[in-house]
Image 1 (cartoon, rainbow, N blue to C red):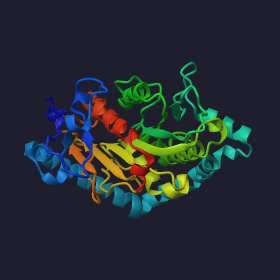
Image 2: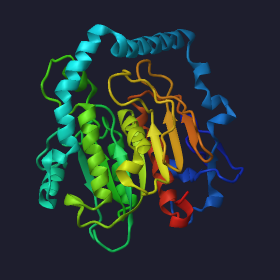
Image 3: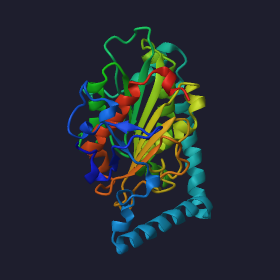
Image 4: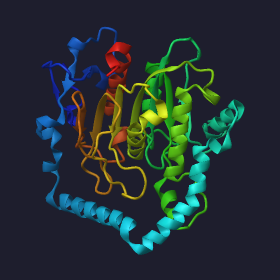
Length: 367
């Protein structure tokens, strides 16, 4: 039986245990077929087993580990300087004064009051391939029959730092995942969102630009609005079915965005269930941490899959604290931060994970 991407750092086993997520190994070699059943599936082994494939730091040269430790300490120093240094306090104060009205405007949906104005606000953020504008923040797939009276799942994909919706798929690997999920699950609503740009945020903080449109805090407010309005079927989304459940996927800054909105899910989406979330090389959103890895599992989701790589010196994810039963934490030792979202075996595996989740009945995914 072929195994699930063992050369990429996955560990597999044919031994079945309760409360373990299963993924069909054929997802590494092509689409699953109707004959693929759970009995033919290998399983992921969680990080706690401490197998060599899941502890790749042992294979990293000592000098690279040393340099990574230096970078981590420098990053922590930068966070302390941003927080306590009186000079940076001045820049922080100025940025807060300058950015506050833009955040408030984004939070208020650019002043939209009626459903028509709300729909216009959503369309101003929607990417149009026929008239590409890299400042647009989301694109979507919606079934041809948008209103059936039956609630349908919503899949949210959050791109990484500076990745745009019009960018080539090789530069924004989750665009491949968007197309794979769209082909596999045409019945689902899929929303793919930008997260902003760290360089724009730093430039705005240093008063080198007056345009905050791609500042991560501003973009995050629009992200909250889009998720909330889709779930509530308002504005541009008024002709859609209700959302039965949400599956969230994020890479890099997008995983930081994911972590933020899942930790504040009740205020955004009420009791809408999130049975599954997936993060890829997750780092904190914004420039305060200069790419610090996220170390805490996001809240709300019933199960979380965390994939990361240990090789990139400046930006890399890590394992999470606070893992729950059924969570999976996997290290891919042959990737870098720039390549992990283009790992096609990983993208196929995530497509399989999502597919299995969508096969579950509502009774199974309510905690």
